Amino acid sequence: MPASTTDWGVERRARHRTRSPAGLGTHAAVLVITAVALLLPLMLGNRTPLTLTASQLVLASGALLAGILATLPLRGALPPPNRLWLAFGGVFTFYALLQVLPIPALAGAFGPYPEALWKHRDFSPRHWSPDIGATLRGWVAFVALFTIAWVARGMRSSQRNVLWLALAAMAVFQAIYGVTAHAAGADTIFGIWPRNNVDFVHGSFSNRNLFAAYLSLLWPLSVAVWWIREMPLLGRLPRELKFAGSLMTSVVIGAALFASASRLGSGAAVVGVAVGLLLWSRHRQVLRGGSVWPAYLALGAAVLAAAWYGLTPLAERLLATELEDSRFEIFLLMVNEFPARWYLHGIGLGGFEAAFKQIQPGDISGWYDYAHNDLLQWLVEMGLIGALLLLVVIAGLIRAAHLSTERVALYAGLAALALVSLGDFSWHIPATQVVLALFVGVLLQERSRDGRRRRRHPGGSAASPSTSAQQP
Image (cartoon, rainbow, N blue to C red; front, side, top):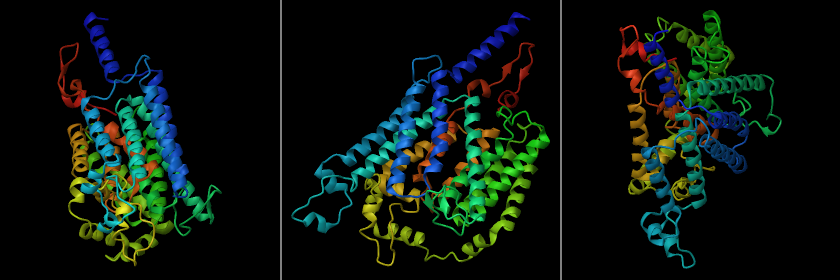
């Protein structure tokens, strides 16, 4: 073999090792994160303080263990987060710290307390946040998700493939379990928790909307795993089996999702699939002549299966939607009754419930710990600083944007959950949060320079950028 060819191969392998560290610690970290991502959906059969606390404990402890394993001084340890990541985490942590420190001046300037409370002779607010316990829990969740996103950003493609395959399997399990439990008339989830929505499919989740949002996030990925070339168990299957597998997966998930009769979740899933189809059509040249028609076929089959199983209840709920829906009422109350300054400085992470009780009218009963609008709740709790942090993440995603079969699915799922955030609280649910953190961490990986510039092969011919940049 010519020396130049050998040198080029050695250099390429060295670049690959530099970009994608792999070692015992990072492999163990990936396994821990995979276990956490699979366990959390099974813990939310009843949304109570106990189950939410337990699920957040699993999320935080798993992320801590994964972070420690990924930084062990072994071969292939992940480098620490760069300065931008550390600055992002530092700003968030400092802002949350200010919200829980017992400083009456901050409480008086920024706290969402009614005037009557200040006049009470036996009580004087001392904290910016009206619920410092919720603020601390929110900060712990942020640190856990930050760690998971950082580990995901440093994963090799082979490690990600195992993770994606596990998540796709969980999505299929949720769909099959939800449909079979509903068809069998089961009145409990795993024999532990009572089913709150016995007339609809909702898997192991307590709420059909949370179930539908979870499936809408993973539906595109569950189809894409069949077409990622290096996917374990699936990558070497004949093309005909991949068509059949992706079609059956889409049918099962789509039927369960639509049978949940979740208006927002089902609508967001369709939007997510549409985004995936659009990006896939732009990506077809990288697929080497592959057509987009299997995806259209999968979506059509899912709709037909859902129609056979129970699309009518979803249609009836969509037709019955009115502006008097409690979600719209809460949205209007937050816009009209919350002082504008709250949206500038924030009321404190996790402080929505305490603040909303001040304006909650008598005709809206119930326990509203979330605003049913994750974006609006984030803005009112974290103010302008929170908006800037969100823009930093969006800017990072745009800067690192490029297409591959894997990324098309992640972008599509993220688009679906972005829509869900406008009318629900799935972004606050640990089972969904961990998947979102994984998606964002991977999508923040920038394409290497070697993939963007023309490379000259040993024979002297130049490889085009599109060819050298092709990824599975």
